[in-house]
Length: 231
Picture 1 (cartoon, rainbow, N blue to C red):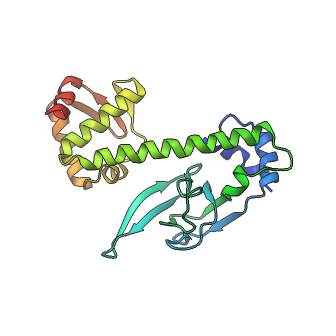
Picture 2 (cartoon, rainbow, N blue to C red):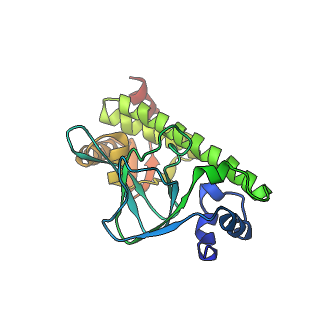
């Protein structure tokens, strides 16, 4: 039942450093359910009982949150191998705080948190590694959310872009790199409109601060980018 998914799970952060055979053994021990969803079908609904940490096996999905005005805000876009629900898995919250819907026919595996941290019949190295990976995933997501709050606190679009690009430069150690997000996702991440983001990036390119082609970005005047943040 689970063998066909080991190649996908092998490349996820939750199963890092666990070989495919051990992943199969873990899944047979944990017995997590796998569900299929049709395009535009809701995978989770805000307020419904929490069913476990989800991993996209096939397809794509979108995480949305409805604000007090009734408007839907897209929080995240999920692709094959992406994880969702990890931030609430070990909290006191017992319901989903967001909704997730399938953008195409999608398959999801749900890992109940009590089975991840609970004792299995033979608490093996792989299970211990899974627990450590879970802690790592939650910690990294917390750091990402903290960084996003930093971006949200910046009012100027150019300063947001400069801060984000310099963070990527520091993280990757490169002057040229590929963004992991497309333009729409980056605009949402920085809490700006797509036209405003594209317009400002175009101006920065014309001024010789950056250069870009599709997802590839080059920092051509890093000192000026730092001055933008410091001003």
